[in-house]
Image (cartoon, rainbow, N blue to C red; front, top):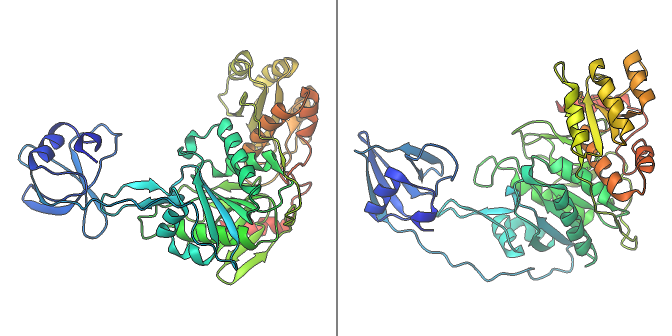
Amino acid sequence: MTLDDSGYRGLVLEKLSAAGAKVGDTITIDHQGREYVGILMPRAQVGRDPDHVVIKLVSGYNVGIRLNELSEIHSIKSGRKRKRPAEKTTSKAQSDLPTVSILSTGGTIASKVDYQTGAVNPALSAQDLYDTVPELKDHANIHARIVMSVFSENIQPADWTKIARSVSSEIKKSVDGVVIAHGTDTLGITSAALAFALQDLPVPVVLVGSQRSSDRPSSDAAMNLIRATDFVGHANAAEIMVVMHGQTDDTFAYAHRGTRVRKCHTSRRDAFQSVNYSPLFKIDETGIAELSAPLLRRNPDRKLKMKPKFDDRVTIVNTSPGIKPDVIDSYVDSGYRGLVLAGTGLGHAPEHIHSALKRAIDAGVIVAMTSQCIWGRVNMNVYRPGVEMLEMGVIPCENMLTETATVKLMWLLANTKTVEKAHAAMSECIVGEISMRTEQSEYRIQSEAC
């Protein structure tokens, strides 16, 4: 990487250029009476402060140093240029191991860190994955490829379609299971989308992510990937699931139903929890323990049913004390076909927006109600305003997650012939997204997990 591509500019770029330093070189920085020694790292392209230089210390940690006119930089050792090994799509197959496809969508879990430069690169091949997590070769024969390289917050409904088609392509190769490496921010939303898009699966398909990057000592990337690979290679289940850490330590992982899982913490390794349901499986070094029955069992002869289209003219509207009716009106006027209200409590919305909801429904927009609460279910029959919304045609979504209800409505509008059929199907359980009652045992599981 040249300095022009390194993200540095201004004073820092001038001093680095004068020292003849390149990214990957070991440099010394004399700054305010202290000497810093480390490997010159590329600088993030974002941020307003151009005066920081970033180096990787011997300890492995990165440090940013704000330079001034008196700071001095000296290059003391050139970084070694590393040759990239020839690409391989598979390693030498072992007949006693399952065959697993790993698809990368841009999350950090299937990336590798070059400790010379500190750059994070996508794992493009099975060899890259073996280099990053060498234990994988003892767990499965890996086929790996990149589907896309997208930050998870930038994933669009069209990307779900692309991922679904890639999964279908891998299943046609008679693999034992498919793992999808995905960023954690929208991992649960993608898993719900794929659950609707890919039905009657013959083998398990799981999404897996990493809360902490692979260059951190506390990274969860390796364990999550190994447990996910073990799971799809051996589990007697066939549906879309999410495999992530079950606790903050490295003891085990849970497999969650794809329509029932949510990221419940910004950074904890056990951030993903099953909501209004228990995890389906527990995976550790000793094997796979079934906790709840899956929708389908593994059956290689089952024919996959794929309906991967989504209508993106659906959005979530969070109700709040100050919400204005024109929020609803603006979506209707913009051509939206579906609104999912994240209501308060049992499914409440301020009465002053009811007339706007009625206008939306009369205009052919499907309006569905979920709750902002994490646990429990919508019940709009308890209070008069809820009953009035039911009478005008607002659909109660039972105990569906708000994100799952949104994805489901996108899918129904793209795959049903009439609005009436989509409206009716919102209340039907299609891929385990609704349960007709909430068991008390689920609350015990949830309270123990929190």
